Amino acid sequence: MTVHRKHIFICENLRDADSGRTSCAAHHNAKLRAVLKSKIRKHGLGKEYRVNRSGCLGQCAYGPVLVIYPQGIWYYGFSEADMDDIITQSVRNDNDIARLAIKEK
Image (cartoon, rainbow, N blue to C red):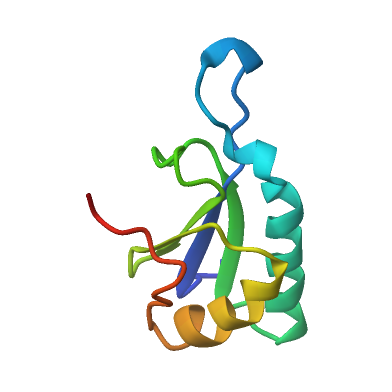
């Protein structure tokens, strides 16, 4: 059994159109997850770090949303262009990226 050092969860929750709430799936999170997963593998990090889809993470207003555990680093509004920074700064080095961080209210 492989024990991963970190897990990166990307919300892919899809709400009904009549729910009145935003949905992370509407932000193409499945594609963003696939890109991040591919880049993790490309860097040879697939055995250490796991990229997973998740259901609702309770931060719908921010979408798209991801969280890195066990550090508890939360990001929103990221794009494909941010993936290398997320890997090098946060996944590998545990540093927050201020421009992507969810601020506590």
